[in-house]
Length: 247
Image (cartoon, rainbow, N blue to C red; front, top):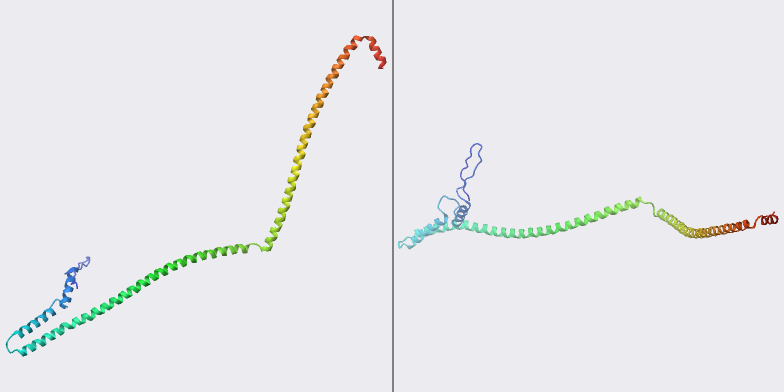
């Protein structure tokens, strides 16, 4: 674990933390303590104590003197130290097994949570689709309601049919009047064309008659002039005879 130093802060100054070791040194120290079963920085490590007990017991056995009691005493001390060293190891094994089981449970829980996340995402997509469908359905319902209100505002079908029938009759009458008007118009056109033709013929006839009349008047004048000249040559006798014949 990290060892924190003292914190000093003056008035109006921020409190700053000072660490004796960095993260890398902390990891090395923790690993060393786990391997040597050292829980504090003070005192002799348990593994070193166990090694000393074993070394002392082994050296005592190698002596040729009659030291059975000392060997038995050192053996008991070594076994006691071994039991003392083994108890934390057993505890650590129990903790490791519990951590492994916890990790397996965590992995199972993680897998289950991932499945639930995937299912939740699928449910969200399905709900989005249902929401869009609901919006479309609601829109159709609103449009249908608006159409229904418009229909309700219209008169009954019987009245509408009656109006349609009257309109059809009126249309038929107007079409008949239109047909009659068209026929009358065609007749008037033909009559007017005939009238124009007659007027044209009459005008031609009048012009011919006028030309004939003028020609006749010219002939009459010419004849009169001729007869006047002859009378002037006949003398008074002829005039007297003519007077007797024509009193």
